[in-house]
Length: 150
Image (cartoon, rainbow, N blue to C red; front, top):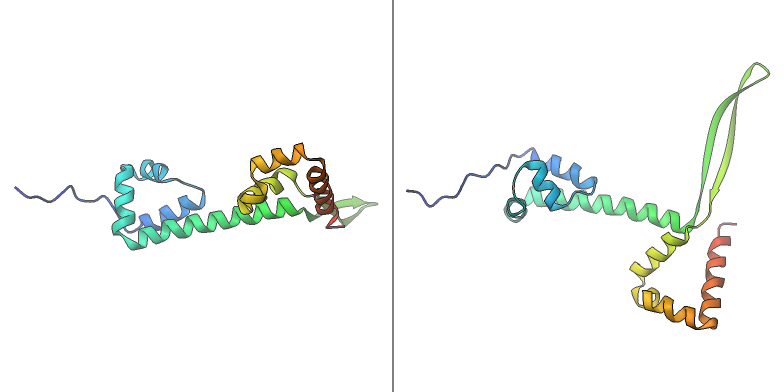
């Protein structure tokens, strides 16, 4: 009788599949379900198959970077050019408008609480509410952000 364990179900094409699924935010549990294996098997593949581990990390890092960029854009506010085609007096004409999206307060708070935890933690916000000087400074800072793109 052999001491060898059950043969692995891993296939080389799993790298690309795992990478793409991680781009969508897949967790190890979701990967296990997708590949019809246990979470332990996924962890084993990560530990023993370098190209699989790299595919997961790169997919996750790319997804995180995309979301961070979107969050930053929302926090800062942005302009978006919209073009459409209309008919005017029997002629087709292109009209373009620039829509302005102001900074999003929740995105700002989320960003600052995660990037500057010491200054923007929940208790710092509570302390600010108790202190009118700090609260006024925060309000002024928010107004400054709101008008920064003007």
